[in-house]
Length: 165
Image (cartoon, rainbow, N blue to C red; front, top):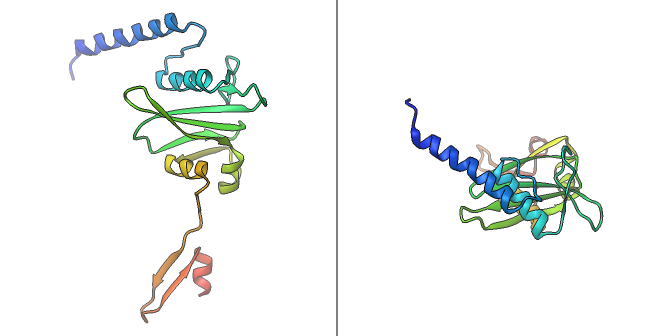
């Protein structure tokens, strides 16, 4: 692979963008993770949250109405899942499109997730699952069906039940 001058020019534009963002909105701290920064900017300015103090671990903003700690996750359209931790009260997930528009797909207490999956240190969840939990339509119970050699069909919601049959 050879050095490509276009990459150098694009990187220069990237650095200039950070400068322009700081000039345009100097009260907001732009870290250089532009997708994540943009999501935090949206959540804080459009949804009336307060930015957490610099260096805070585990959450990005605080809800001034009730003091809830809010973890903000921002992904691009086409992303399948997100990672987050339990050290927060509220999860706020935005999907950003290429035209900079966004959609909030999850805005809720982590209790909803704890009820479905139990309490863990870290989570990885599909965005489709978060959308269903947010809408109140997620049902984790599945039915498994097996057709036996004798032609009989047996169904159960888990392997243990299946073995009993």
